[in-house]
Length: 171
Image (cartoon, rainbow, N blue to C red; front, side, top):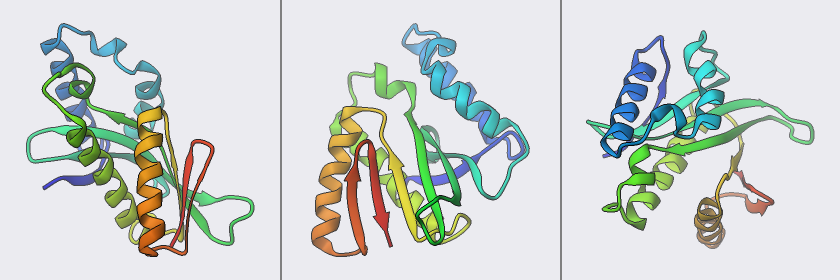
């Protein structure tokens, strides 16, 4: 069972994640400092500084490893009557980049876990009636475009739409 939880210096999970991902990179003869340095440099201060209820770094993990991370923040945005939960900087663990034994189902499981974790967060600690997912890659965009179609047909949400590199959900 995959879990979705906040990672930070204060709870000890951020250094644990970094150590694990550094080890994964080494196993593939890669340097962790070069692995997704742009995204890690954005997420690092969020995880290392004092934690706020409105923003943080969250991880998808199982009992033994961290599979991916993302940034969540909830804020008021012009044009919305209530706070909006935004999901940005989705990053998979190094093994997703380097391990040939992983397949598309592993990737889909991770993205689905991010989605479910975000939905749960939007009903809990980062309550918001609107959610916006930002995509960094064509694969994420393709996955969530299909996800959008399925959600639209299921009529679970008031509105589901793709706008540029964002998936919008109104609960």
